[in-house]
Length: 147
Image (tube, rainbow, N blue to C red; front, side, top):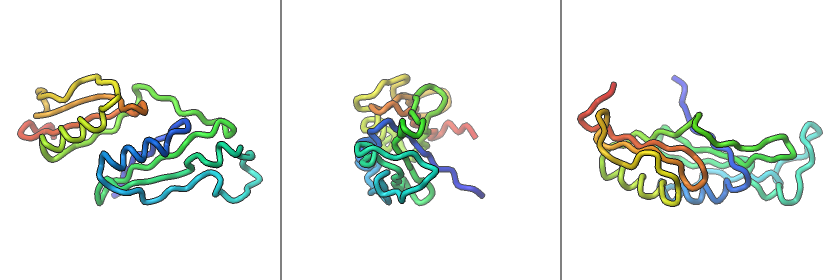
């Protein structure tokens, strides 16, 4: 069975976002690679001194089965992160306390779509964008099993 991990793109603030996620999930970064550490490659355009400091790849472990990974987009490579309603990360938590802790941390400074509350399908559910524009949902089914 394949594993599914989230990979997030940012426009220059990946490092700031992952330092934040590191505190939210109380974990450490597994890796941080910068564009300036890439070996020279004829297929890639040159990287400016500013872009050399940006994150090429980083990862943190959420739990034994889930990684959160990310990188900065480089405009010289024709990349730009665009945020919208097409994607959200769903955190399926084990308790109301965990739902509240993650909601209070992740939503701070963000935009709330649905505040954490009881719903027909869950004892607690929330939907929001964090301060970096990433969409999140927090779900605790409890006794209201959907599947």
